[in-house]
Image (cartoon, rainbow, N blue to C red; front, side, top):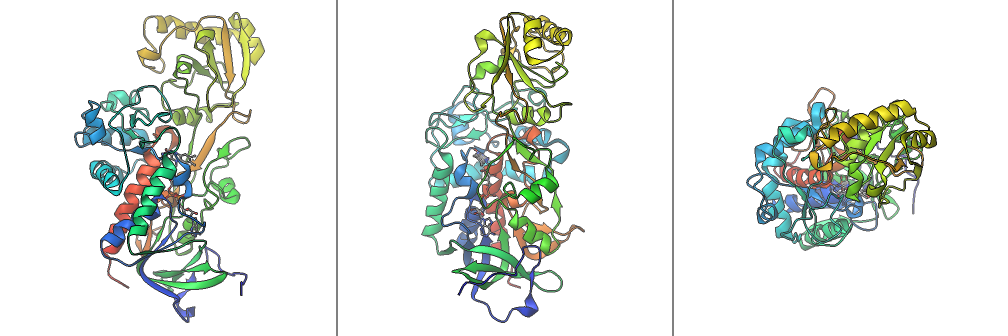
Length: 494
Ligand SMILES: Cc1cc2nc3c(=O)[nH]c(=O)nc-3n(C[C@H](O)[C@H](O)[C@H](O)COP(=O)(O)OP(=O)(O)OC[C@H]3O[C@@H](n4cnc5c(N)ncnc54)[C@H](O)[C@@H]3O)c2cc1C
C-alpha cells in the first residue's frame, strides 16, 4: 500500500536504521538524462553492476529537450572539423574556455575536458550518434539544417579572438532543426538497453543512506508506491539535473535571474533534489548564483549590425558576442531598460525573441522620444558609433569589422527590456562541489565516501552565462558522466 514518506533529501536515512536491503548493486545512478546515461554505459562497460533510478516514466530529462549541440574539438580537430578545413588545437581550446569562464574557470576540469574531447566525439560516434561532415556558416543559435559544425560561442568576438585562434566547436547531430536532444537520448537509451543495466522508471530517489560519518552506502527510493532501500556497494552517482524548476531554491540563489518575465527552461525533475541530497550528507555547493541566461536575438544575423543601448542610451557590449554574454550584461545594467537600435534595412523580425518594436524614427529625436531615452545622449552614442564604424573601428567594444556598419535613419528599436515579454530563458549552473572525477566534496574539501555527481547536479565546466557557448552543458554532462562512471566502477566496495 502506498505510504506518505517522511524522507527528505536533506535528511539522510541513517545506516543503523536500515533493517533490509531491497535491491543491491555496485552503482546506483539517480537520473536517466545525459549524465546518468553516460555514467551507466561506462560503469557497465568497466564490469560493474549498475542500476538507474529515474523519476519520469522515460529517459531523457533536459538532455532530451535540448538541441544536444556538443562543444568538442582540440587535438588537431574532430573528424568534422578536419573535413570542414579546421585544424583545432587543444591549447587554443583550453585558452578559449579558460578565458570564457574567467574567475570561475576550473583549469583542471577544463584541461581534462579539452584533452579528452576528440575521444569523446569518437565515443559518441561509436555509440551511434550521427554527425555530418559539413558546416553551417550563418550566425545562428543552432543549425536549422542537418549540418554539423557551427560557431556556438564567442570565439570570433573580442576579447576572445585575441586570446585563442577562433575555431567552430559546436557539433550538431545529423537532424534538421531543434531535434538533437531526442536523437542523442535515443542513441544513449539504446546503448543502456543493450547492456545489462537495470533501469527503474517512475522511481523517485528520496534521500541517501549514510552512516554517522556521512559515508554513503545507498539511497532510499519510492518505487511502486513503496519506499525501498538500495545498497550501492561502490557508490551513488547523482545525475538529477539542476534546480531551475524549484522556486524556493531560485529565490534563494538566483533571485536576480528568476525575476518576473524570465523563463526557466528544463524538465519538471529539475527540482534540485540531487543537490539537496548531497548537501544532506555534508556536500558543499558552489556558484549557486550562476545561471545560463540568454537573449536569443539572432537569427536573423543582420540584427548584429545594430547596437544594444541601456536606459542611459549607452552601449555596454560588442553585439557580435554569443547571445548569453549579451543577456548576462543586459541584466547588470542600471534601470534594466535595453533596446536594440537598428537601421530599417537591417531589421527583420527575430525568430525566437518575442520582442516588440518599441519605437521607430525618421531621426534620432523622434526615436528617442518614442522609446523614452535622452535624445542628446542617444545622438552622441549613435554619432560616435557611426563615425568609427565607417572606418571599420569600434574603439569601445571592438566589435568585429564584419558587423560594423553605420546606423542611418529611418531607425527601429526592439524592446529587449527584461520583464517586457521578451524571451530571456535560463537554467542553473551552480551545484555540488566535486572533483572532475565526480567525488562530492565537503566544506573542508574532503571527498565524501560513496558519493559522486555529474551533469547539472554538479557545478561543472560552464559556470557563467558571460562565457557560455552552446554545447558546453550537454558536453559537460556527457563527458563528466562518463568520467564519473569509469571512476566509480574502479572503486572497491565499502
Ligand atoms: C530547451 C533547452 C535547450 C538546450 N540546448 C542545449 C544544447 O544544445 N547544448 C547544451 O550543451 N545544453 C543545452 N541545454 C542544457 C542541457 O540540456 C542541460 O543542462 C543538460 O542536458 C543537463 O543534463 P543532466 O544529465 O545533468 O540532466 P538531465 O538531462 O535533466 O537529467 C536529469 C534526470 O534526473 C531525473 N531526476 C531528477 N530528480 C530525480 C529524483 N529525485 N529521482 C530520480 N530521478 C530524478 C530527471 O527526471 C531527469 O531525467 C538546453 C536546455 C534546454 C532546456
